[in-house]
Image (cartoon, rainbow, N blue to C red; front, side, top):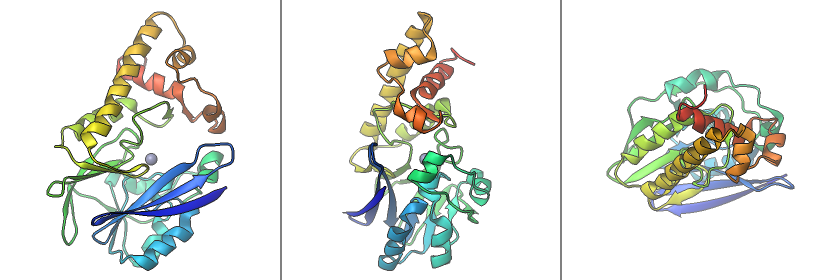
Length: 272
Ligand SMILES: [Zn+2]
């Protein structure tokens, strides 16, 4: 496995992207933003050296976590130690950051096991020297997930809300109904540049996140038809063109298209 590291400058916003290459699998990417002295997310534990290099380059005054997952919070304890900044997180994430779960093997291999970190609770707004961000709770992907809206700059820091508009699978812990609700609340925001933690900058959050909502609702409608025809969850996933192969096996069943199908059917009140 190897880790590559790149820097992208978007005016006052810098995106540092970490790429993990695992033999036989697609590269996995995740990033860290730095804006106005704030580090947004801290990358996975396995990118520690890259994060140490960012700290040499940037003067970090505050640390903010979009949610508690290991590819975002992985170096939070390290960065807190190095900078003296106590990371901010949604209050729901505080106990999760203080007592991290033991990760399944594939996540330990990809991102590394993170250690506990002491955090402080985000309120409704988050201020830096030059900007004021509205903090919007957007659960679904994770219970503590937030996005940040800077109205005067027309920026939306989307955490993991977007990720992709070609959704093919979900994690067992995701709540698809809440995710759809959160996507709708993000779409109620006037159009912004989108800063996604995994895929970087996009010019229009309405366009990207709107495509994701269309995809989810399209899959949901088709899944309902297949369910009414008597197909099983597994058969529905195949019929939708998202059969589970390697991912389900690698993740020990935690990450699969069947979870997505179940979540969509639950959202439509077709499953308990
Ligand atoms: Zn996540």
